[in-house]
Amino acid sequence: MTVVDPARPTLPGRTLAPGRRVWDGGVAPTRRARPRPSVAAADAVEVRAVGVGVRVSCPDPATRRLVRAHYECLLGDAVPARIEYAIRTDGRRWQLRRAGRPAASALDAGELLLQLDQDLLVQLQRVRADLFFVHAAALAIDDRAIMLVAPSGGGKSTMAWALAHHGMHYLSDELAPLELAPLSVQPYPRALTLKDAPPNPYPLPLDTIATSRGFHVPPSRFADVARAPTPLAAIVFLHRGAGVARPAVCRLTAAQAGARLYANALNALAHPNEGIDAALNVVRRTPCFALVTAELDATCAVLAVMFRAAPR
Amino acid sequence: ARAPTTRFRRRSDVRSRVVDGEAVVLDRRRQLVHQLNRTATHVWERCDGRHTIAELGGELAEAFDVDRVTASRDAAAILRQLEALGLVEADPEATTVQGE
Image 1: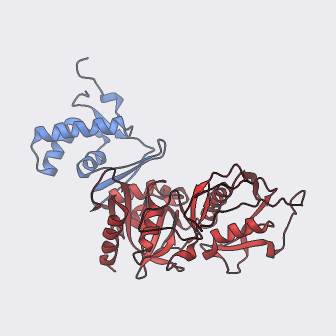
Image 2: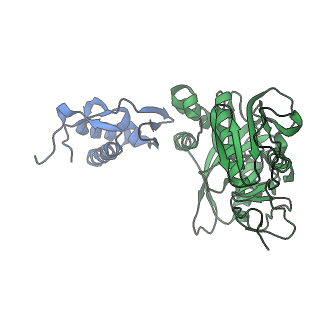
């Protein structure tokens, strides 16, 4: 079934299984001519990410539902907001505002979430400069965290979704914030975002939200979501193996892993000596592997066995 | 090819660390991070403007239990790579080009 929202011609259609929810956008025209300078808490989504309070004011109910679904496992704790956003819509496009930056426009829900995610990521790095942020997905098993590191499009999110079907708990998707002492991964379980639908036997849940950016799996659809900092037990650097029949894993030396980790660090320069010591500090204390991926199910089976056997 | 008497220096703005005998080299100017194997790390650590290519070959032969001819060839090849990556610079006072 091809779903096309007639009210939003800019929203690309998505082919989905029957019954799957498609984000319909904040298409109801707003009656407000200009945004209010402040909004009541009821109009806002309150999030706590890596211990930082974030408030996103969204007077438009549909937009608020979208943002709440995206960050549903980060909602709740009442901490003073250190980062504040305002999202307004006129029914055709959204405007994302944060004090100190120019307003950004988004033509569809996927673009809006992307801009919010990206700016929030930068702000969290600014506020929590003590953490070492890595472009990685993270999962946990038996209170031990595993980081999957790869560049964009490297299959982190798909692998994370698949591994959740093998008994692993969801910690984060795009961003693994590392506490350096003690070495642990802070949870950042926002909606998992997949660029493409995963192959069987890892179907998307029915309430997956489809946008122009891909498929957003609400974190609550994972069997388990890790909500506390979890000691880091292993780092796996993913490499797509084109035409590879079987997945292959090899252990990396500290220097091999350090160079790879540094290349995927997001805020290395916030740390002394341009972050090189922080990256090496992490890999010296953690078993690191390179994994050439093959068919998803086979790759997951290898990883699941490997993680269960990882030293405690 | 560089003359055997050529001396190299590590670029001063490049940061490096050696961990378990292998170097991680951070080149912020080119936005690159490199990982060197043990042999290359041995050479890298001696790119201080004092060792010639010939001397580095001799040191490699001693350190890695390999014959001097092979070690000299490998040392020259490593230095060519490091120079091509812009991580080391030939000391201009000691640089000559063979055949000139």
